[in-house]
Every structure is written in C-alpha cells, then in structure tokens.
Length: 507
Ligand SMILES: Cc1cc2nc3c(=O)[nH]c(=O)nc-3n(C[C@H](O)[C@H](O)[C@H](O)COP(=O)(O)OP(=O)(O)OC[C@H]3O[C@@H](n4cnc5c(N)ncnc54)[C@H](O)[C@@H]3O)c2cc1C
Image 1 (tube, helix red, strand yellow):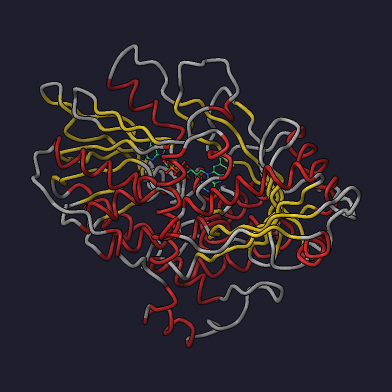
Image 2 (cartoon, rainbow, N blue to C red):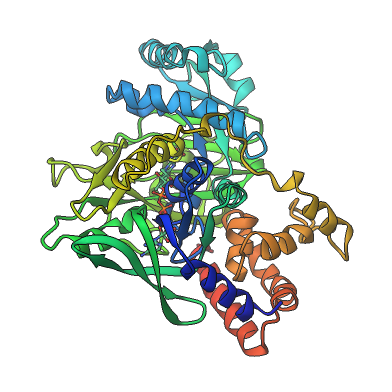
C-alpha cells in the first residue's frame, strides 16, 4: 500500500473519536503510559513528533539498574524502587534484557573496603529482587575477568550484577504491546498546541510531519511526556511558567569488542568530575560512557562535543592496557537527560534528582518527566493514577507488573517474512539483522524513514557508522518497494540519512 494512503487512514483514526487519554511523546515514559492505560481498558492515543525512541530513550547506557551512584548520594527510595523495577523488566521482557556482571577495579585496600561495602549494601537492598551476589575479587580473579585491564597499581576488584537491555528495541516492543491492548499510536505527528474549552485542555492541534498538514485530536486528558521538551506545552498552558527541565547531555562511544574481550562490564566509580564511567559489552560491541554536560537548549539530534569525546577516550584509556583512540570509534551518540530543575540553580547537573516528577495543572494537563528508563513502568503507573483521577474514570487496577512485553520473534507475521524472498538473509555479514527485520519494521512497526530502520528497529547507526553508510541504499530500495516511494522521495530519504550518519562518525 502507498505510504500516503496509509497515512491518511491513520489520521482518520486519530481524529475519529474523543479518546480517554492522549499521550504526547513516544519515548520510554509516553510508551509506558500508553501500555499501562490501554491495559487498564482506557482508550488511548499517543502522538510522537519524530519516531518512537528518537529522543533520549534510544541514547542511554542500556542499563536496567538500581543506580549505584544514587546509593552513594543517599537516595535509598529511588534505588529500592529501581531495583524492584529491574527485576520486573527482566521478567516481562526477557527477549531484550539480560543480567550483566560488572567488575569495579580497585587500587587500594581502602577502595576495596569502601566500594565492596557499598556494593554489598546495593546487593542486600535488592532483597527478593536480587539477581546475583556481590563478591570481592583477588588480583588474579580481576585479571581473569578483565584480561585487558591495566594492572599498574591494581589490588583487586569487586563483582556485582545489574541488568542490560536494548533501549530503542524495547520502545518499539512497548509500542506494539500498547497497540495489542487497543491503543492507537502515531509517529511523525508533532503536537503544536493545546485546545482548551472553559480553560480546560480538551485536545491538541497536530502537525503531520509526513503529509505536511495539520489536524486536531480530542481527549478527556492530555499527558505531556515529551522528555526534555515538556516545557513547550507547559509554557503554553501557563503563561510565566518557569522551565521545569534542565537538559544535561551524556555521550557514548562504541568500539570493537576486541579491545574489551570477555563477558564482564567495567564500572569506574569516580571520574575526574565525580561521575561513573561504564564499559559495557553490548550487541557484540563495547559501549563506553557517559558524560554530564549541561546544555542551554534541547535539540532533537544532539551532537557530542569534542571535549566529551576526549574525556571518555582519556578516561577509558587509563584503565586499558592498549589506549583507545579516535580512529577506533565505530559510532558516537549523544542523549539529553530530562533532569527536573531544583532550587540549587547553577549547581552541577549530576546532582539533580533522577527521580520523576508529575505535575497536574489547573487546566487538567498532566506533565511527567525525569526518572530513568529502568523505572518507566512505575512512572507510567503513577501517571495513569493521576489520569484516572483528573478524568474521573473511576478505579481501574494497574496490571503491568505481570504484563508480558511484545516479542516480534514470537509473531507469526515475522516468521512468514523470514520465509519470503531474502527474509532470512543478513543485511551485513558481521551483524545478525535480517531482511525480515526490515520488512517487519516497515509493515508492522511503523518504520517510515531509513533512519527508523537503521537506528532504532535495528541498531546499525549506534553500532557502526561506516557499515550504516553502506546499507543506506539497499535499505532505501527495499522501503521504496514496500511503501511505494516515488523516485523523488527515495532521493530525499537517502540524502537525509547520509547527512545524519556523519553526526555519528568522528573519523
Ligand atoms: C546519556 C544517558 C544515559 C542514560 N542511561 C540510562 C541507563 O543506562 N539506564 C536508565 O535506566 N536510564 C538511563 N538514562 C535515562 C533514560 O534514558 C531517560 O530517563 C528516558 O529515556 C527518558 O524517556 P522519556 O520518554 O521521558 O524521554 P524521551 O525518550 O526523550 O521521549 C520524549 C519523546 O517526546 C517526543 N516529543 C517531544 N515534543 C513533542 C511534541 N510536541 N509532540 C509529540 N512528541 C514530542 C520526542 O520526540 C521524544 O521521542 C540515560 C539518559 C542519558 C541521557
């Protein structure tokens, strides 16, 4: 079917009725809310201005964690909550999550005692949600676990466990889960304005980024889950509203796994600026990050600063036998933390709370931001409790604690695609992604641009900018067939993607 006809049908559906709930933003927070509300029986519409997970939710460190760092800051409640959510996510989405072993190298007996005690407390705090036992490692055991570690001054290590996941893949699976429970979700639909009646929000005006036209949608409640962009709607709702979010940038570099062989991740508890730095095996590569750089304004495609790249390379090279240089970087990506502003304006953003905040305006607009990927389910639950109250929808229990998240590999449609044409062939010999993944992305997961396929349905762009470049044209041709793109549209999409890839490359 032609992409224009599909789009017109979708807009018809979005505008056909008054929904119980309209969610603005298709990141972890918004998608979690859509899943929660739809599975409680609400009629849900979600609108995403770009693609699902285009924002922060595809740019994380990929950890499902309690947050050792927040423990050091004394935020016991946040850590306990996240440890519980960690185990719920590992249970409900086993196809995109796994338990990951981490090793903290130590360079004095005091460090071993200090970090060992902290990580033991972290372990004990997980109680019934424990996923592994924290252990002190000898010098030899540390080298066995991290054969690449620089041994100068090394005393030993500590091993602990957390979770790891594929962030944008989980977003897409949440989108499908919400859909399976009756929600309607649309990407490339930018919410521009609130519609009000008697000073209450009753809907939104939307700009359709694909067809370049506007339309309106109605709902009993609107939830603003726009990540670092929540202030746009908030300030429209209340004149003189002070900004709620202080965006802080964090970058990651991705390098070949040969530099960090083995199954264990590295955690450096304290960098020069007091942050935690990770080297985590991910999809057969190593992801290294992150930074914490306050930025003045939020961009949809944030770019890593040169100082941030140098900072990560310098720090990781201190711990590795063979230093990592720019030429070794396969991909670099930046994300923006939606940190909720506190009264310590001007202080470092690394000290701002990672807890989430929900705000209900007199107009009925509900805004939710902050938090972590790991706690998205709990955030969604809290937000939907507010929705039920504001819209007077009565009591409807939350069911997401035991709700399995969609897994495309169990979908009959995916298996049919595997058997058709070149479905079971790899896109690139070094990566596991198949042509069936591309077809499934377009036909069942709303992938509409080459970027949607190569960055978030598969993860090529985050893993390897050079290989991504090689795949642009063949993927574009496949999408042209599936969506009946004109030659002009094909060229436009290819050009956009080529330009984007250069942002992920530092060669
Ligand atoms: C560098 C970094 C590392 C991190 N690592 C971890 C980690 O390892 N583990 C962890 O638990 N957490 C981690 N986090 C935190 C986590 O990634 C975020 O808390 C989470 O992704 C935020 O999700 P969100 O949905 O609120 O925001 P986003 O993912 O940014 O989603 C908001 C969405 O709203 C859309 N939008 C904006 N304006 C509009 C509009 N007007 N109309 C329609 N749509 C709109 C945007 O396009 C975007 O897709 C990390 C964060 C960063 C920055």
